[in-house]
Image (cartoon, rainbow, N blue to C red; front, side):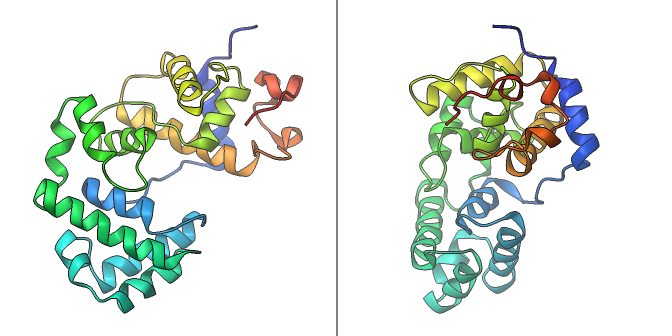
Length: 230
């Protein structure tokens, strides 16, 4: 199997197509956890709308969320897509964990060694190991190449790593292969995360990818000869 193309030029090509990507402005790990849970199967605009409503109507302190009425939290959850009752329960559960385990301040977790930080963050609903790595990366704490499913799929099709029997094993394979070609800084890896995510959403889709429009087609295993990707 040929080696994948250098990643930085590929990211430059994606940025030329999509423009610079900007992460959401979030204050600390608790807001990042709330951001991930305030919407379900919604686009970024709907998620931003729901999160803005949470900040405006309730606030993002754990105690404020626990003190809020079900009616107000339901108004917020309704903006974030389907299963609003489940998301109301998640917001309360997140706040309860934050208060009980961290005294309402999850921030010090970011200074822990990576395994301990990830273990603490994955105690929250909706945060698996990739999500914990994303929080550490976007907080500027650890330059981990956190990936979500769209970015993972794009890199796998570009020849980074191998598809394994489990998602976790595939993730680690792709992450290790791609990290080697990137500067070990948070800004460089946030940029990679955002551009690859956007590419996976718009062109390198799971079903019916638009290889005919892809600026990376010449470097892509999938475009040269499609193979099934989960």
